[in-house]
Image 1 (cartoon, rainbow, N blue to C red):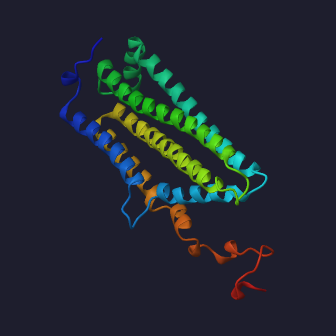
Image 2 (cartoon, rainbow, N blue to C red; image 1 turned 180 degrees about the vertical axis):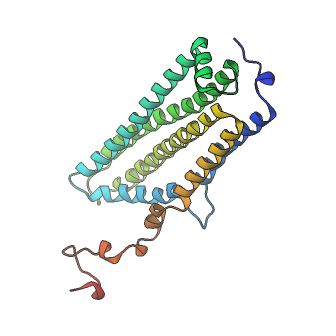
Image 3 (tube, rainbow, N blue to C red; image 1 turned 30 degrees about the vertical axis):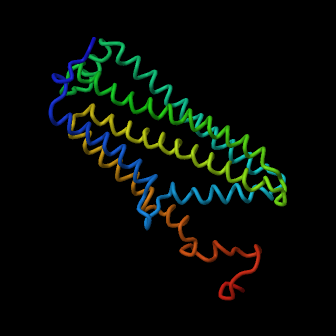
Length: 250
């Protein structure tokens, strides 16, 4: 049965959904294209990924590199599987009108089954986007693994660093899709707030946007990545691991 959007959506619903979609797109753009003087965690990690691939050229054996790329692939596979389960559950819910009506009655929601169906569809749309991002990230991390295997384990080989640079850029593209999928999961959770009404959706959207932007621009993780000098010197120069500054020597 087709849903009459004009009848199912009130002006406040339209405002709340528009805010959600704009926040979803806007946070993604800011995270990947931050102001030049305020890089995000995602952007900062690009340089570390390039450094990783350069260091890999002279590292032997490459057990650590293989372990890291395998961990990244397993992470994307986990989230892709979770997204598929969520999509299946949502499709089963909207395919059973009796179950929807029972849910409305059990939760005492101030809506009907048609409006609830529309709200579930919004969540499914965002989760489906996350699923596609995770699947593509998993595939691109696989491409990266092949490129890494093609890098000669000899710094003197003229092909080594150009191939390592290629592997780094492919790794960065995979990470970009993975991060995009994670943001979609966050906003799918925010979209669940619509089940409680448009005001709840606005609040969950704002809270989710704040959480994402804080993690990217104001977190302790970002501070540690950006400026290791802000860390406790005892962590940077532990006893027994190389020379220490005079003020830390026993």
